[in-house]
Image 1 (tube, helix red, strand yellow):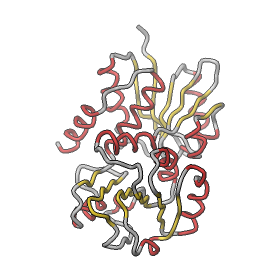
Image 2: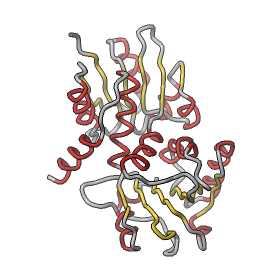
Image 3: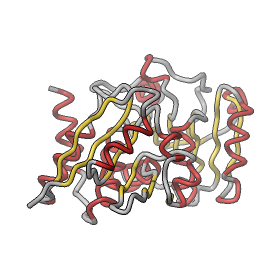
Amino acid sequence: MSTDRYAVMGNPIGHSKSPQIHSHFARQTRQAISYEALLVELDDFAVAVDRFQAEGGKGLNITVPFKREAWELVTERSERAERAGAVNTLLLREDGGRYADNTDGVGLVRDLTINHRIELEDRAVLLLGAGGAVRGVLAPLLEQRPARLVIANRTDTKAIELAGLFSDLGHISGCGFGALAGQRFDVVINGTAASLQGQVPPLPDDLLAPNASCYDMMYGAEPTAFQLWAQARGVVQAFDGLGMLVEQAAESFYLWRGVRPETPPVIARLRTEMDA
């Protein structure tokens, strides 16, 4: 049996857990694949994709800083990828065609609603940040029909502009962090990278509705700064983004292989490895 080749491209790439995740998926589903992490020079991405496809590669995951550039290098995009303006998954066809998807948003939604049983329909949802990570998850979140979705960002004009791009999909608005005073939310999702620096955006202490849930798209061996902020305010359901990482990978794997892996054991395995 021949082994199909897949990879993740980024810069930096040494931290990537994608090879571990996809090797777990492959063993679990008995798929004959190889998967590697490829460091790509900043000005060499298009050439690297061409080379990988020419060598018979079947698919790629794309991480920072190439998600936007990858969006421009394809022949066909999913609707959610079109909306996101960035892609994290390429399906490479033998005829030279390239199909692109963005699985970040569906990965987030599956982790929230299935793994953590957090209800989004008819809830007030707050998304912190207005960068590519947030834009990539907006369409799948709005498909869950929240009562309202607010994007809050340090620069309010960026949040307002981003909300406008998705206003046809649901009740969505944008504002600066200062405008959150007096508002209450059932679900708060941190899409900023502040947690990586041990910081939290300036949020009012009375932001959280009773029984609110908090979710950080970042993750680590220890609780993130945003999780700690939530726990200090009595939030019981405060989760990091490790499950989102595994769920978006599972969606990529399904696109490539037509088989949906079981994610809970892989999330548990990664958590154990991180804690070791």
